[in-house]
Image 1: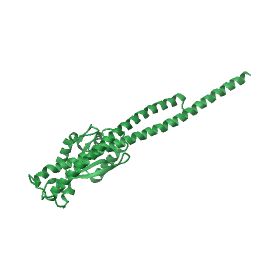
Image 2: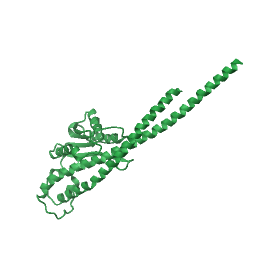
Image 3: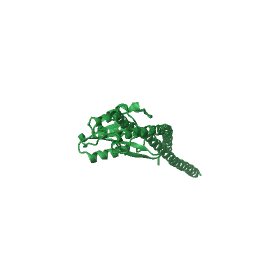
Image 4: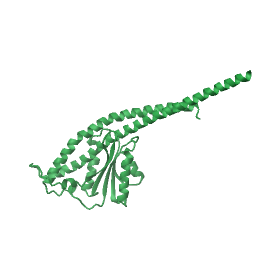
Length: 285
């Protein structure tokens, strides 16, 4: 049995760890509220730009490359993870899905490109000698579009320049504080727009539809990436909050078990001392 000093030391260290995990839980809860609101506030803009682009493309005979499906020679994977761990299965679930997809669909590194947002994802693929063409790290907990404008623009440009023939986006979709779903979304080509045959609204355009689409389509694709990032950030804070709450609860359980062991060891030591005293007194009689 461990000594009283050892058990007491473990209790003290566990209590300190509990203080840290509890503080991290509260910080993540605070960040989650704002991140969730950011994601919700972005939805009206995302829906409106989709509506406008769909209306214009439905009434146009545009041959814009972003609307055209072509033979797939190289696939792009944009993966959103966090910069830090301690978030439960938030990162591992995404990376496992992407990794399995790549291994299943490709036999050569020339058949795909990887773009990562977040240090965990970048390091994961580089350790496995998989090509990470672009990456961005150290994003703010509440990122602005300006923070990812360059990588979003460059990613869309890869498709326009035919360096990739399709683009898939992987992130954690925020369902609730307790639930996040790994989501795969095909961003390019924009098939759901080109396949939409609904009549366009009776608008007059200046300049013409093709020139407007040339500007709007890249912006729409970039908005999909930014919206996924906001969604992923909310999921990250929720996952970290849940993980830290679980760690705090486990610390409470461990402290309870250690306290019980401490009391038993202390009781055994007292009993041993009484036995020795009684035995010594009996020997003097």
